[in-house]
Each structure stands twice: as C-alpha cells, then as structure tokens.
Image (cartoon, rainbow, N blue to C red; front, side):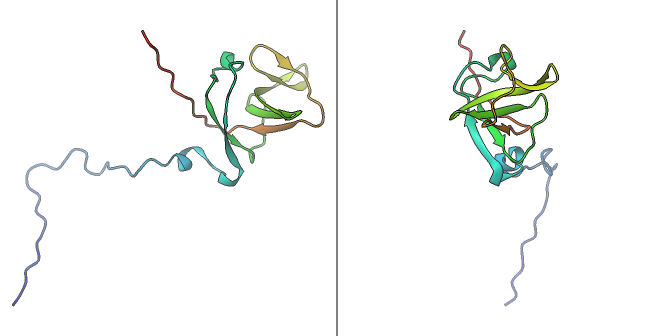
Length: 127
C-alpha cells in the first residue's frame, strides 16, 4: 500500500510578521563581552544621583576594560567600594560623584572600569 505525504498549503495572505520572528532575548550576549572578567555591582548609596546613577542601580563591571577619562569606575580603597566617574582635574586623574572630587588616591587603591552598558532599576512614579 502506498502512503501519500502531506504537503503544506498556504491559503490567503501571509502573516505580516512572517520573517521577523526573534529568538529569545539573551542579556549575557547583549550586555557582557568578557564573562570571566565581569561581575554585577548594586549601588547602595544615593551619592551618584547627580550623574544619573540611582540607589539600587545594578551596574555591570568589566575588569578587562581599561578605564579612560569620563568612564564610571569602581574604586576599592581601605576595604570599601565606591562608584565614581574618572576625570582629569588640574592635569591629574581624579574621581567625582558629580558633587565632590576626590584627588589622587593612595597607592593601595584599585580602579575597575564599568561596562559600557549599564542596567538601571526602573523607578515607578506614584501620582
């Protein structure tokens, strides 16, 4: 006995979305370039709000990036971590939160660059 195989028929018009199907959203692929050198840092203070980084923001830190001026960086000094913007002030490297400027830090300070991309917590407004 011979079996026939079904063939797909298209009737009517094709879907306007046909050909635009997306694969699932992969945040690792979009936001992280060097996974072995990347970690997340939650901002726990409001002292960076003048630079639009709000308390509770989740920052992606990429240790493989060499920081350049105007980058947001994580500074580790005396066992504490601070998020600051690295700037040039009076010809020297300095760090600011938009209000205060910290001039050159002692030698035991580590500076780590943030990723070029950041994810911020969405803030709801209640009217």
